[in-house]
Image (cartoon, rainbow, N blue to C red; front, side, top):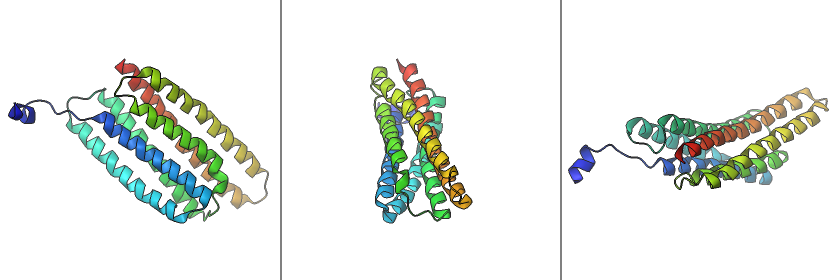
Length: 206
């Protein structure tokens, strides 16, 4: 039976755990970014870049396993979309850091209220993905609904902050901070799209 299991039976991978690991590192990166901005902690900002590399390695491993496996708990397209969208969350955080560094923006505490919403969104996404293995649609739906509502909050907060920027006279300041706000909205969008994929996967397993 050991020979049959090893060489003849189709390989199975625990994609529930694999996706949850990606969601966990995404949520951790958002939390660390929030705390780093509140505390103006440059060391923590640097550690987020290291976490981004780990997230990319995890994404590559999950994608390789997806291509190599025959049996999956959901259709491969759904798993592929979730892997790539979770990766986009971490990439968007990395891009936020790259832009703040390139623009020389050191005071980031002003972005903390928006980042606090992003932390709640990323936490809800991780919690929703953790319920996939139990096929608990009734536990997943409130999490995705929360993410959709909070995405609207991020868009509104970014629009309000942009309006305040446009009331100023320093064009360079406006352009720099407007781009940063757009990147925060991009992080929120990627969490929102991941929630859409989560909804699709949850519906298919009930």
